[in-house]
Image (cartoon, rainbow, N blue to C red; front, side):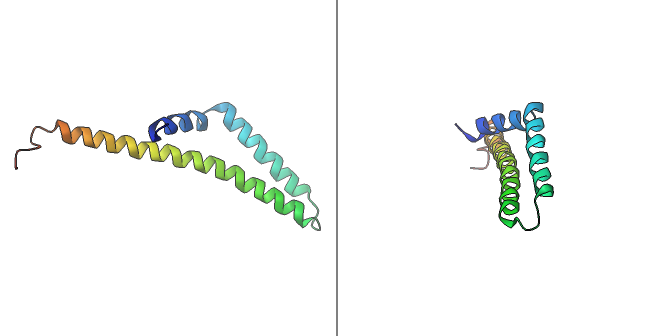
Length: 92
């Protein structure tokens, strides 16, 4: 799968109401558990913070894929524009 295909799939996921609802539900559950965690239970609190970070990392990774696809599409578009330029070989 190339960068543009991955970007299209990442965009569909990131814009999906179902994904966003699930993301927010998981995030809210993690935050609620952090709030309920006793101050003495540092291991559980640390595990929950890791879960929250991983959740954010998944979304960030898809955003990177989306951006990478946009860059790749731009490069392809620019290359095509150069090929289509009637003055391309004029000065050679």
